[in-house]
Amino acid sequence: MPATLNISALTQRTGVPSDTIRKWERRYGVLHPDRTPGGQRRYSELDVARVEWLKARLREGFRIGEAAVLLGGGHTVALTVDELRDGIVAAAAASDVEALRDLVDQSIALTALDESFLRVLGPALATIGERWAAGALNVAQEHLASATVRTALQKLLSDQRTGLRGTAVLACVPGERHEIGLLMFAVLLRSDGWQVAYLGADTPYADALELADRLGASALCFSAASRETARALDGELLARPPPASLTVFAGGSGTDRTDLRRAVAELRRLSDVAQS
Image (tube, rainbow, N blue to C red; front, side, top):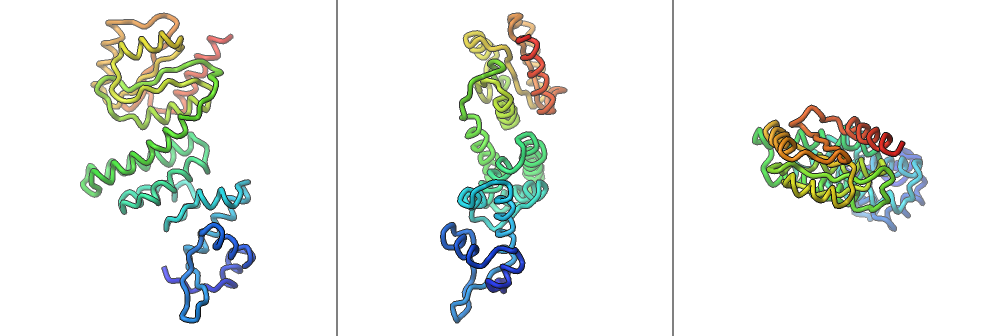
Protein backbone atom coordinates (compact mmCIF):
# COMPACT_ATOMS: atom_id res chain seq x y z
CA MET A 1 0.00 0.00 0.00
CA PRO A 2 1.37 3.46 -0.86
CA ALA A 3 3.08 5.51 1.84
CA THR A 4 1.68 9.04 1.55
CA LEU A 5 1.25 10.28 5.14
CA ASN A 6 3.77 12.52 6.84
CA ILE A 7 4.35 12.39 10.60
CA SER A 8 1.77 15.11 11.26
CA ALA A 9 -0.91 13.22 9.34
CA LEU A 10 -0.07 10.02 11.20
CA THR A 11 -0.39 11.87 14.50
CA GLN A 12 -3.77 13.30 13.45
CA ARG A 13 -5.06 9.90 12.38
CA THR A 14 -3.96 8.06 15.52
CA GLY A 15 -3.84 10.67 18.27
CA VAL A 16 -0.31 9.58 19.19
CA PRO A 17 2.19 12.47 19.52
CA SER A 18 4.88 12.64 16.86
CA ASP A 19 7.65 12.35 19.47
CA THR A 20 6.12 9.10 20.71
CA ILE A 21 5.79 7.73 17.19
CA ARG A 22 9.44 8.51 16.46
CA LYS A 23 10.48 6.84 19.73
CA TRP A 24 8.48 3.69 18.92
CA GLU A 25 9.93 3.63 15.43
CA ARG A 26 13.53 4.14 16.55
CA ARG A 27 13.55 1.97 19.69
CA TYR A 28 11.21 -0.86 18.74
CA GLY A 29 11.22 -0.87 14.93
CA VAL A 30 7.42 -1.07 14.73
CA LEU A 31 7.13 1.27 11.72
CA HIS A 32 9.00 1.20 8.44
CA PRO A 33 8.24 4.43 6.57
CA ASP A 34 9.36 5.17 3.05
CA ARG A 35 11.59 8.16 2.36
CA THR A 36 11.02 10.95 -0.13
CA PRO A 37 13.97 12.11 -2.30
CA GLY A 38 14.39 14.86 0.30
CA GLY A 39 14.64 12.34 3.14
CA GLN A 40 11.21 12.95 4.70
CA ARG A 41 9.31 10.01 6.20
CA ARG A 42 6.10 8.85 4.55
CA TYR A 43 3.77 6.41 6.29
CA SER A 44 1.15 4.03 4.92
CA GLU A 45 -2.27 2.84 6.07
CA LEU A 46 -0.49 -0.23 7.45
CA ASP A 47 1.51 2.08 9.70
CA VAL A 48 -1.73 3.68 10.87
CA ALA A 49 -3.13 0.24 11.72
CA ARG A 50 0.06 -0.74 13.58
CA VAL A 51 0.00 2.41 15.71
CA GLU A 52 -3.71 1.89 16.48
CA TRP A 53 -2.97 -1.72 17.43
CA LEU A 54 -0.21 -0.64 19.78
CA LYS A 55 -2.51 1.96 21.38
CA ALA A 56 -5.09 -0.75 22.05
CA ARG A 57 -2.49 -2.96 23.75
CA LEU A 58 -1.31 -0.09 25.98
CA ARG A 59 -4.93 0.46 27.07
CA GLU A 60 -5.06 -3.22 28.02
CA GLY A 61 -2.02 -2.84 30.27
CA PHE A 62 0.81 -4.04 28.05
CA ARG A 63 4.12 -2.23 28.15
CA ILE A 64 5.18 -0.80 24.82
CA GLY A 65 8.15 -3.18 24.55
CA GLU A 66 5.90 -6.20 25.19
CA ALA A 67 3.33 -4.95 22.70
CA ALA A 68 5.97 -4.33 20.03
CA VAL A 69 7.30 -7.89 20.36
CA LEU A 70 3.77 -9.30 20.16
CA LEU A 71 2.93 -7.20 17.10
CA GLY A 72 5.99 -8.50 15.28
CA GLY A 73 7.00 -7.33 11.84
CA GLY A 74 4.34 -8.86 9.60
CA HIS A 75 2.22 -7.04 7.07
CA THR A 76 -1.08 -8.08 8.67
CA VAL A 77 -2.70 -6.26 11.59
CA ALA A 78 -5.63 -8.10 13.15
CA LEU A 79 -7.95 -6.06 15.34
CA THR A 80 -10.75 -8.59 15.88
CA VAL A 81 -11.18 -12.33 16.46
CA ASP A 82 -12.44 -12.74 12.89
CA GLU A 83 -9.42 -10.89 11.50
CA LEU A 84 -7.08 -13.08 13.53
CA ARG A 85 -8.70 -16.24 12.16
CA ASP A 86 -8.76 -15.02 8.56
CA GLY A 87 -5.22 -13.68 8.89
CA ILE A 88 -3.90 -17.09 9.95
CA VAL A 89 -5.55 -18.71 6.93
CA ALA A 90 -4.15 -16.04 4.61
CA ALA A 91 -0.66 -16.35 6.13
CA ALA A 92 -0.72 -20.12 5.58
CA ALA A 93 -1.76 -19.60 1.95
CA ALA A 94 1.10 -17.13 1.51
CA SER A 95 3.58 -19.42 3.32
CA ASP A 96 4.34 -16.42 5.54
CA VAL A 97 6.17 -17.94 8.52
CA GLU A 98 6.55 -14.68 10.43
CA ALA A 99 2.92 -13.62 10.05
CA LEU A 100 1.70 -17.07 11.08
CA ARG A 101 3.76 -17.00 14.25
CA ASP A 102 2.74 -13.44 15.11
CA LEU A 103 -0.97 -14.03 14.56
CA VAL A 104 -1.01 -17.30 16.52
CA ASP A 105 0.82 -15.63 19.41
CA GLN A 106 -1.57 -12.67 19.30
CA SER A 107 -4.58 -14.97 19.35
CA ILE A 108 -3.34 -16.66 22.51
CA ALA A 109 -2.18 -13.48 24.25
CA LEU A 110 -5.10 -11.21 23.42
CA THR A 111 -8.12 -13.48 23.91
CA ALA A 112 -9.21 -15.94 26.56
CA LEU A 113 -7.72 -19.37 25.89
CA ASP A 114 -11.04 -21.06 25.18
CA GLU A 115 -12.06 -18.25 22.82
CA SER A 116 -8.70 -18.44 21.07
CA PHE A 117 -9.04 -22.19 20.55
CA LEU A 118 -12.73 -22.29 19.65
CA ARG A 119 -13.08 -19.09 17.59
CA VAL A 120 -9.62 -18.57 16.09
CA LEU A 121 -7.14 -21.43 16.02
CA GLY A 122 -9.53 -24.36 15.69
CA PRO A 123 -11.64 -22.79 12.89
CA ALA A 124 -8.51 -21.50 11.11
CA LEU A 125 -6.93 -24.95 11.05
CA ALA A 126 -10.21 -26.49 9.92
CA THR A 127 -10.41 -24.04 7.01
CA ILE A 128 -6.78 -24.69 6.11
CA GLY A 129 -7.46 -28.43 6.16
CA GLU A 130 -10.49 -27.99 3.90
CA ARG A 131 -8.47 -25.92 1.45
CA TRP A 132 -5.72 -28.54 1.44
CA ALA A 133 -8.29 -31.26 0.72
CA ALA A 134 -9.65 -29.13 -2.15
CA GLY A 135 -6.19 -28.64 -3.61
CA ALA A 136 -6.05 -24.91 -2.86
CA LEU A 137 -3.17 -25.37 -0.37
CA ASN A 138 -0.32 -27.84 -0.51
CA VAL A 139 0.88 -30.21 2.19
CA ALA A 140 3.77 -27.96 3.22
CA GLN A 141 1.43 -25.01 3.82
CA GLU A 142 -0.96 -27.12 5.88
CA HIS A 143 1.90 -28.59 7.91
CA LEU A 144 3.40 -25.14 8.46
CA ALA A 145 0.17 -23.86 10.00
CA SER A 146 -0.28 -26.96 12.16
CA ALA A 147 3.32 -26.89 13.36
CA THR A 148 3.09 -23.19 14.27
CA VAL A 149 -0.01 -23.78 16.38
CA ARG A 150 1.46 -26.93 17.92
CA THR A 151 4.63 -25.08 18.96
CA ALA A 152 2.61 -22.32 20.63
CA LEU A 153 0.47 -24.86 22.51
CA GLN A 154 3.47 -26.86 23.68
CA LYS A 155 5.02 -23.67 25.02
CA LEU A 156 1.87 -23.06 27.08
CA LEU A 157 1.86 -26.65 28.31
CA SER A 158 5.47 -26.41 29.49
CA ASP A 159 4.36 -23.95 32.20
CA GLN A 160 4.56 -26.31 35.17
CA ARG A 161 2.09 -25.72 37.99
CA THR A 162 0.86 -27.65 40.99
CA GLY A 163 -2.20 -29.72 40.19
CA LEU A 164 -4.93 -28.44 42.48
CA ARG A 165 -7.63 -30.65 40.98
CA GLY A 166 -5.55 -33.79 40.47
CA THR A 167 -3.60 -35.44 37.69
CA ALA A 168 -4.92 -36.19 34.21
CA VAL A 169 -3.09 -38.32 31.64
CA LEU A 170 -3.83 -37.31 28.04
CA ALA A 171 -3.16 -39.37 24.92
CA CYS A 172 -4.35 -39.99 21.39
CA VAL A 173 -5.81 -43.47 20.90
CA PRO A 174 -3.70 -46.07 19.06
CA GLY A 175 -3.41 -45.18 15.39
CA GLU A 176 -4.50 -41.58 15.95
CA ARG A 177 -1.95 -38.92 14.95
CA HIS A 178 -4.13 -35.78 15.02
CA GLU A 179 -3.14 -34.25 18.35
CA ILE A 180 -3.77 -30.49 18.16
CA GLY A 181 -7.26 -30.80 19.64
CA LEU A 182 -5.82 -32.85 22.49
CA LEU A 183 -3.08 -30.24 23.03
CA MET A 184 -5.74 -27.53 23.30
CA PHE A 185 -7.61 -29.65 25.82
CA ALA A 186 -4.39 -30.18 27.79
CA VAL A 187 -3.72 -26.43 27.96
CA LEU A 188 -7.28 -25.73 29.12
CA LEU A 189 -7.01 -28.41 31.81
CA ARG A 190 -3.70 -26.98 32.99
CA SER A 191 -5.26 -23.51 33.24
CA ASP A 192 -8.16 -25.06 35.20
CA GLY A 193 -5.80 -26.41 37.85
CA TRP A 194 -4.96 -29.93 36.66
CA GLN A 195 -1.52 -31.48 36.57
CA VAL A 196 -1.30 -32.82 33.02
CA ALA A 197 0.82 -35.72 31.79
CA TYR A 198 0.68 -35.33 28.01
CA LEU A 199 1.59 -38.42 25.97
CA GLY A 200 0.65 -37.27 22.46
CA ALA A 201 -0.12 -39.23 19.31
CA ASP A 202 -0.68 -42.97 18.82
CA THR A 203 -0.43 -44.19 22.42
CA PRO A 204 -1.20 -47.81 23.35
CA TYR A 205 -4.06 -48.05 25.81
CA ALA A 206 -2.19 -50.41 28.16
CA ASP A 207 0.82 -48.08 28.39
CA ALA A 208 -1.33 -45.03 29.12
CA LEU A 209 -3.28 -47.00 31.74
CA GLU A 210 -0.06 -48.14 33.42
CA LEU A 211 1.28 -44.59 33.59
CA ALA A 212 -2.01 -43.26 34.97
CA ASP A 213 -1.85 -45.89 37.73
CA ARG A 214 1.79 -45.05 38.52
CA LEU A 215 1.02 -41.33 38.77
CA GLY A 216 -2.13 -41.84 40.83
CA ALA A 217 -4.13 -40.02 38.15
CA SER A 218 -7.87 -39.59 38.55
CA ALA A 219 -8.52 -39.12 34.81
CA LEU A 220 -7.20 -40.78 31.66
CA CYS A 221 -8.29 -38.81 28.61
CA PHE A 222 -8.10 -40.14 25.05
CA SER A 223 -8.63 -38.25 21.80
CA ALA A 224 -10.15 -39.99 18.78
CA ALA A 225 -10.66 -38.13 15.52
CA SER A 226 -12.47 -40.99 13.77
CA ARG A 227 -15.27 -43.39 14.65
CA GLU A 228 -12.97 -46.32 13.88
CA THR A 229 -10.32 -45.35 16.44
CA ALA A 230 -13.02 -44.53 18.99
CA ARG A 231 -14.54 -48.02 18.56
CA ALA A 232 -11.09 -49.57 18.95
CA LEU A 233 -10.74 -47.78 22.28
CA ASP A 234 -14.12 -49.17 23.37
CA GLY A 235 -12.76 -52.66 22.67
CA GLU A 236 -9.67 -51.97 24.77
CA LEU A 237 -11.82 -50.77 27.67
CA LEU A 238 -13.90 -53.95 27.56
CA ALA A 239 -10.82 -56.15 27.44
CA ARG A 240 -9.04 -54.32 30.27
CA PRO A 241 -11.37 -52.18 32.40
CA PRO A 242 -9.73 -49.38 34.36
CA PRO A 243 -9.75 -49.40 38.19
CA ALA A 244 -12.66 -47.72 39.92
CA SER A 245 -10.41 -44.85 41.01
CA LEU A 246 -9.67 -43.88 37.41
CA THR A 247 -12.16 -42.31 35.02
CA VAL A 248 -11.44 -42.91 31.33
CA PHE A 249 -12.66 -40.02 29.22
CA ALA A 250 -12.86 -40.10 25.40
CA GLY A 251 -13.33 -37.01 23.25
CA GLY A 252 -12.69 -35.68 19.78
CA SER A 253 -14.51 -35.64 16.47
CA GLY A 254 -14.80 -39.44 16.49
CA THR A 255 -16.94 -39.25 19.64
CA ASP A 256 -19.94 -37.30 20.85
CA ARG A 257 -17.65 -35.11 23.02
CA THR A 258 -16.33 -32.34 20.78
CA ASP A 259 -16.90 -29.23 22.92
CA LEU A 260 -13.68 -28.34 24.76
CA ARG A 261 -15.44 -26.13 27.31
CA ARG A 262 -17.93 -28.86 28.18
CA ALA A 263 -15.17 -31.46 28.44
CA VAL A 264 -13.23 -29.30 30.89
CA ALA A 265 -16.41 -28.75 32.90
CA GLU A 266 -17.06 -32.51 33.06
CA LEU A 267 -13.60 -33.17 34.47
CA ARG A 268 -13.99 -30.27 36.88
CA ARG A 269 -17.15 -31.88 38.26
CA LEU A 270 -15.24 -35.16 38.57
CA SER A 271 -12.56 -33.39 40.59
CA ASP A 272 -15.07 -31.59 42.79
CA VAL A 273 -16.86 -34.85 43.62
CA ALA A 274 -13.58 -36.62 44.43
CA GLN A 275 -12.47 -33.82 46.75
CA SER A 276 -15.81 -33.37 48.53
